[in-house]
Length: 307
Image 1: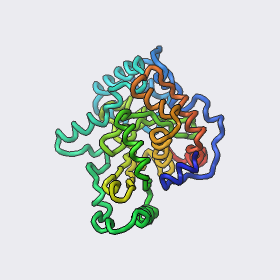
Image 2: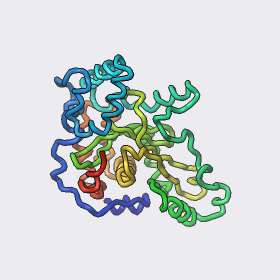
Image 3: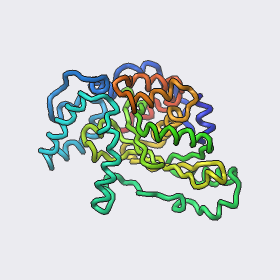
Image 4: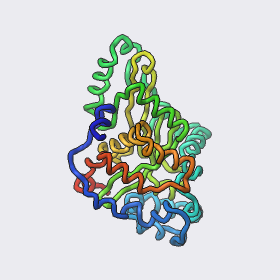
């Protein structure tokens, strides 16, 4: 399956093999596993409630800055975090965070500097569309791949039929929970579609910052050439403080794994997350990822230098 995904998307991953021991409940699985599995007693409000999370250190500065500058806002968010524990994963207030963030930015007349991403990034800003219309799909693919091969980013040329299936399902199920292998276990990211853009942010960031949580990765899909050439171009922007290319690549590959799969059991996880969240089991996502082999390039040694 991994080979088929690589061929279809033009993406690749390293050869390192992760042990199945990584399935042990680490990373966001403790203590947030209590949040993901439904109601239950949790720690009290305040920053101490987050410190057991192995990924807390990566967000410590932002959390402490918020506590110093706006203590009332900080305590309010910690209280809301406890309320979220009573709600299933996929609850609409979480899946609407991108929409809320964009609406607030538009009301101010500018995007928040935290986002670091280009709003309404067009294909013409990357490629001279009129010029390449004279070329074949294969030639455009070569141009696209050659241009981005020297850049530190994720990119792909997606066959029209694959994108059609992905897009049709994205309209019905606009959000999903993705698992990213880490040295400590797995870190969860929520992916939310906004038009043809797919925004990712870490689950812990949503829990601590709510609707203002910035994107860590945005996948841009360009269907301008789909009708004439039968291809959809894709590239990405990412926050390098939180993700490196092979991690962003893993998340991008999972989009096809879950949204463009022919395996009904795999896509059913997306449907459950969006429409029957009380039945959603995060371990099923990890099992699918492990079976596909998409996380094999993320070895502990590669992740050990990240803070």
